[in-house]
Amino acid sequence: MASRRDELNAYTFARKRTVGAFLQPGGGGSDEDAPRPVRAVLPSLVVAAVVVAGFGMWGVIKPTAPKGWDDGKNIIQGKDSTTRYVVLVDPKTNDKVLHQVLNMSSARLVLPAGAKVVPVVDSALDAYKNHGATIGIPYAPDRLPQADDAGTPKLWSVCDRPGQGEIQATVNQSLFVAADADAKTLHRPDLVLAPGQWLFVQGPQDGSKDNDDKDRPGSEFLVDSTGMKHALGDFNTDPLDRRAMESALFGSDAKPQQVTKEWLATLGDGAPVKFPTMPGSNSLGARTSVKLSQTSEQKVGRLLSFQNKTFYVVGAQKLYQISAFQAELMRNSRSLKSLYAGTPKLAELSPADYADLKDSFDTSMMDSDPKDMPKEQPAEHAVNNGKAARTVLCSTFEGWAADKSVKRSVWAYTDYPTQVSSGSASAHVSPGHGLLFRAVDGNGGVDSSGSNFLITETGLRYSVPSNNDGPSGQGAPAPSASADPQGGAAQQQTNEAQARLGFDKVPPTLVPRWWSDLVPAGPVLSTYAALQAQNA
View 1 (tube, one colour):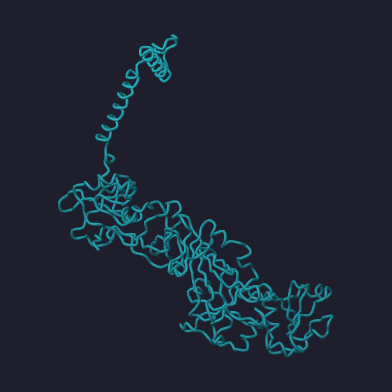
View 2 (cartoon, rainbow, N blue to C red):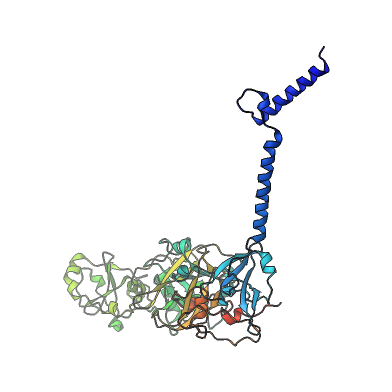
């Protein structure tokens, strides 16, 4: 039986082996070589204490805000709160004052051009010695477009969609300022009107929203693929003649779509559609001296075609060449029906007759037709009529032609070019985009005068004054001087607001007022407005 001494030796041996297994003794082969636990743990505790102390000291001495953050040239943003501030000089005490600012636009308007966003810990902001009132422009944009994007022209498209009951009061309208994918949709070849495709529309009468009398002169229009509107007749056109025009151009079951006067205003003013008048029309039905193989066609006023490519009307002494558009109008003219037993039909001009007469064709009727009048053969239906009608109609501003005239296109589909917010009163700007533009009344010349605006993805247009008007605020903080090394603090830039917003090198894109006025107006973006205290 083991004695107490043997048990103690066994315990000591087992303890040393256990400690040696954890502390990895040297390779001497003896358990006595295992280091003592305190010798291994103590250095670790010392290192840990030094590290903790180092971090503690860094927390004490580290800077709480970047150097020069309150020099009046930075947009200050709280690191945790993300609240924006600016530091301005009090004109009375000449002290620096920290002001909370409502939005990014307001912050930039009160600081020099090129101001940067500087993050500062909120504790440093809270501890700042002088705090002033919150300033800024309510509802000004918080996100501004990049300068290169603001200077890139966009597509402007105003779209009318039918409402309930097909009356003026229910027509829905939306305006799109399109870029990227939205612009590609407005350029889809299968949705943009091509030559020979037309719309049949009706505008309001005499300012009335409701329009039940479709025979009211001048209220119905043909809209062609170039964005020109052509009234069907004029105020003296007989209602029966106007119905004959409708049948000739849009089919016997044609019905005009109601559109707004604002939509019509974006279209060009084309010549009104009238029935062509041929020389000697007072002798309709008389025998002609023109020799034709079909003697039944030797009557003044009869209509001919050659291989369905060229069209003619028989005159007293020669054939008058006319366009396919003119031929279809004349075929439906009430004055020619007396020459035919029923609806007039175009007879085929034989190759022999064509060869004999081609040198004597008179083109005066085509030459006298207005240049903007369509020349193509009318389709069976207008694009916005018939079973496959596309009734969301968009008039698009494409830019300026070489002669400084407005370039337009017409788009038609069953829905808007992109999804719109229900009940939204603003324009729809492609996300992430905006535009600095000048609304002009005249052509696209570089000297066109007008007001400058900024439109952002909020869908509002904000006036950007080209001068620095506005009274000096009584007790209001003073804006930081613009960084203009040549002019100095006393000399203000002509377009200071534009420069402060970051668009000093962006020339405004010229946009016709017919489109720009459809965008709801936001507040004026000026330095004076941005300095106003918002105590409510």
